Amino acid sequence: MIKQRIEAYGRLMRVDRPIGTYLVLWPSLWALWIAGGGHPDGLVLLVFVLGAFLMRSAGCVINDFADRKVDPHVTRTKTRPLATGEVSPKEALILFALLCITAFLLVLLMNQLTIILSFVAVLLATAYPFMKRYTHWPQLFLGAAFGWSIPMAFAAQTNAVPVEAWILFVANLCWVVAYDTIYAMADRDDDLLIGIKSTAVLFGEYDRPVIGLFQTSFIALMIFAGLSFDLGAVYYLGLIAVLGLMVYHQYLIRRRKHTEYIAAFLHNNFVGMVIFAAVVLDFSF
Image 1: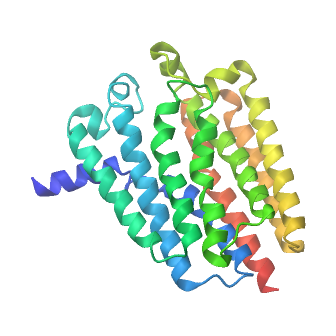
Image 2: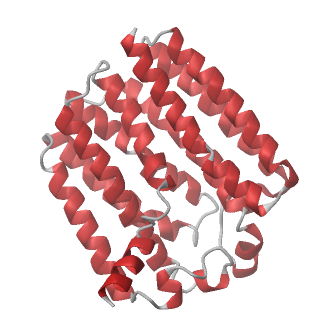
């Protein structure tokens, strides 16, 4: 019985599907390496790695709480623990609070500016799941929630958030809107039936070119960020590789199949990984 409860909580936190943690973590690592000149502080690095897991897990819990009456009607989400009744709404809120408190205790090891910024992170993580009821741009709020680790990383590492850090933040925003729109395309038919809003619904038949526009904006802003932080040739070679990956994502979704939408979304892990590798190697030479 206890084992089953733990497994249900784990699925609610998406422990079995770590892609979201990776997508939160990669921008944090880019920012930490850049802010630290290739040598981020060890404690700061540990706090951000653990924080990425905790806050992504908290985001999943509050997302499923917000969608507990919707998920049973969506093919992809109808087996989630809150949708099936394995976990009660009260249990979900308690778990969400515990995850946020644990993350905040970690943040208390950082400087005052980072602590102040962490309150915005919790606000964004809490608000995002409810945005799909009010706006067709919930992906924009997700991008802000996922990317808020960037100014926090600069704050933790340097006790300041330079203007250049916000270029990286906006770039990441474009990336998240692109890949989460692809993800939302897998649910678009169900969302249209039950009245849930998303960029996939908003863009309609123009989804692929608009996603391409966001992908192009991401690359352009990452070039601008590289110039602003005086990064070298290895970094730009990494961006060329990322451009190739994004062309591949467009290829994957061309036939508009559910499985290929999911595959393209998951493949974005390599985008974050390649950029991180490029940043690390650039500082190594």
